[in-house]
Image (cartoon, rainbow, N blue to C red; front, side):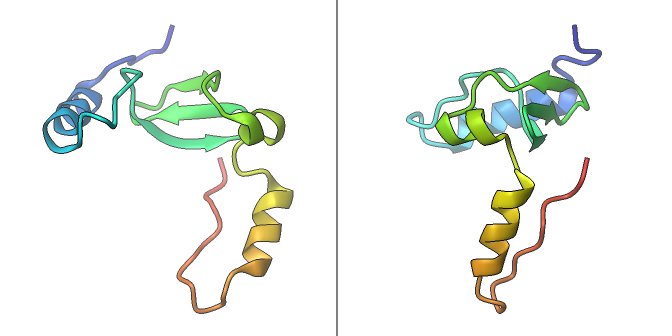
Length: 88
């Protein structure tokens, strides 16, 4: 069980989500992701989870796969304000 499954910051952001975003954009899980790498995701409380929600490409490659990230970075316009994802 995560150390802080739903801290104050998570509650605050989920409340804002409900107040400010369209109801068509549902909050299906009571957590707020901060980052993802491979098959893991981290919430804003610092808890790490195995991502069982991912779609087809993420399931086979993982989040931020180095080869995919490098290929995309090589195709970006140099003037585009992009930076590589942070390392975990």
